[in-house]
Amino acid sequence: MESQNLKITRTSMASEENCLLCRVTYSIFSTYSPMPHAMALNVETGEFFPFDQLRSYSTGREMVEALGTAWACQCSRGWFHQQFVLRDSQGKVLSDTHYTVRFSDNRLARGTTDTEGRTRRFRTNDARQIVIYLGHKDA
Image 1 (cartoon, rainbow, N blue to C red):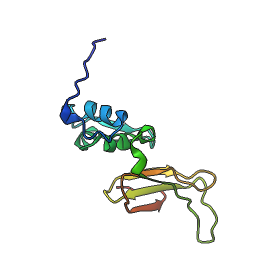
Image 2 (image 1 turned 30 degrees about the vertical axis):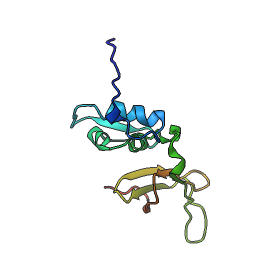
Image 3 (image 1 turned 90 degrees about the horizontal axis):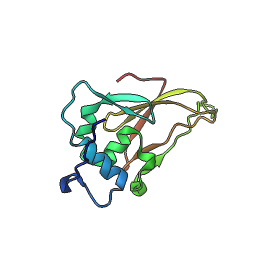
Image 4 (image 1 turned 90 degrees about the vertical axis):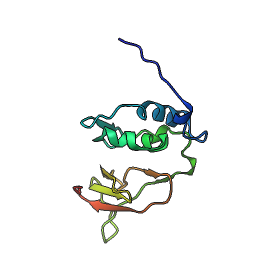
């Protein structure tokens, strides 16, 4: 196996406020060449997205969020981290129900509520509007 050197430059360090995970993630993925047919995986949702979309983010925090590894981020103290309970009009929890979340930047996240009607946690770095659809909504 060929060894590779990780080259970290001052321009790849977005901010000293970012934790090591965010800085290393940014230093790795921001230097890749364009790969128009490659896909990246969000490990939290299991969904694939275009790798070049990952490369387009300007901070490591955005990259770890897109990759679904933000739970390990140490600089997320100021992030919003919300979970929702879905209920019908009579107040009964909607367990094992498919849902789709659309964020204000048009990203989609899909999931299934747990037995108590809870969604997974959604993390954003500021207050944002999200819309939750029951069932799976196509882009």
